[in-house]
Length: 132
Image (tube, rainbow, N blue to C red):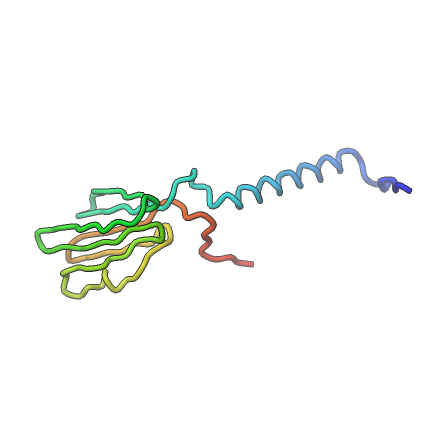
């Protein structure tokens, strides 16, 4: 036998519940698509002396990029997994020891060569942290 709605529910209450459920499903769908960067992939922006000189789409495959300066050079590896400074002829090589960078907002800096490589865009399904 079918049960009746409790008498204390009104049509307006049911409408509010339906709107909240629809909004929740839309929110989950947006989260499932990634972090909403218009489908843009991960990119590396290369700055020399504070000026943007190059933007590399990391989804285009692996590349080795040699950046030459009056004071030396840097060898950068880029690929879908992120960016990595392979070689540099700067004195302390902090940029080489910084490791693989794979999250938007992370960067590699070589101060002696006045070089900054920064990741931008979105990496699908990548969360920094989840807090409760």
